[in-house]
Length: 144
Image (cartoon, one colour):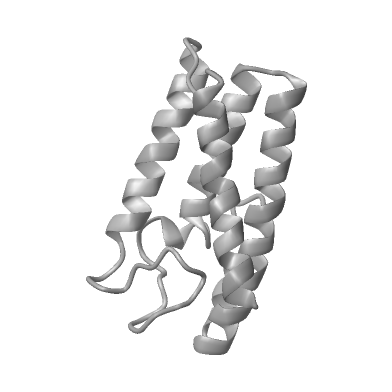
């Protein structure tokens, strides 16, 4: 059941980005939106590069190897989700409308659900995760 929910949440994230792209609401001429989206892409690449070969999975299923705590994981527990939310919300704010707001809220709800599920799995798999979680914020460094 958890795997099904995890896959559905990932699908919602991808669909949210696609909806914004197809409707012309993903990219903006605003320098602030462009900067935020470049930051989102850079954070995503930095986070992805921290994984060892064969360790990365798009499913909320901690694989073999060690718990991630290097790179952006030193500052936030979920940098890839943070990057996705930054990309989505910069688009929403750059093209403010009821439709983009709904996309942002729906994606955020499903990403938060996926984070909660994934953290449960990480706590089971890695005993040291509880201490790491106490010392590191989920999405926004030093804030949330």
